[in-house]
Amino acid sequence: MPILNNTELEQINLPNSHYGYSATRLEELGATEYTIATIVADVSGSTSAFIFDMEAAIARIVQACKFSPRADNLLLRLVAFDDTLKELHGFKLLENCHLSHYGGSLQSGGATALYDATENAVASTTNYAQTLSAGDFSANAILFVITDGMDNVSKVTAKRVKAAFAEAINSEALESIVSVLIGVNVNDQQVSRYLKGFQLEAGFTQYVELDKADAKTLARLAEFVSQSISAQSQALGAGGASQPLVF
Image 1: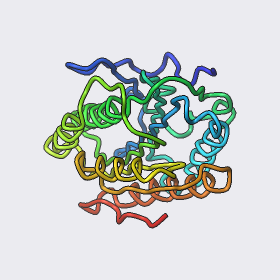
Image 2: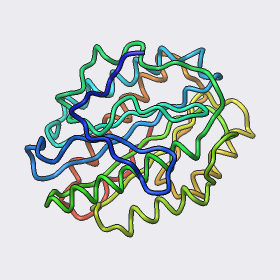
Image 3: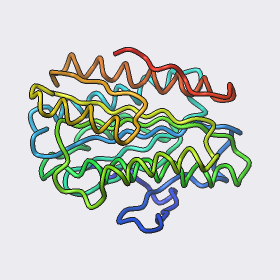
């Protein structure tokens, strides 16, 4: 697995958490405002059939974001999870996200710690936004959690995920936060109901469901994600979040 992080990112611990995160130091930031984007990808054993297409989709997202008019105002974090959380890279300036590094970056196997991964994504976003705010940077955020199944091994609960979203809003460090739960390869009605329920219980802004996870469908997903990131970045300074896009 390629090492996508580097020593230039600051390693940060989160209070009362099993996992932390890494992020670009404030002195490395050249703009005055940033959109903090996070992609969380399920790599549990059931994703093995489409793991390479998922890698390609992530590379497409990064490539598309590089052509965004707000490319210089984007910070991207990439996380993979099965029964444990793996930060492939922390909040990096887009110019430091190299497309060649994403091939072979995902490896499938293990169970599904969906709640743990989501809680970390939200808590890390809030914590880094507070750091940015203290340094007089303006920020908003968008995060995507991509999964094909139900949680079966997390240490935290869905209620804790909901609390993390509330803390993000109450922190007042973010102008707005958009969160999208994405169910991929969802053919089982039980899984569909579960994920829709998790969206409502946790408080995700939006739920998107794909009944396939082939190359064509995941390419469309990459377009949706990159356009959503661009829209949220363009909304920064407007006092609210971008409008949800239709997949």
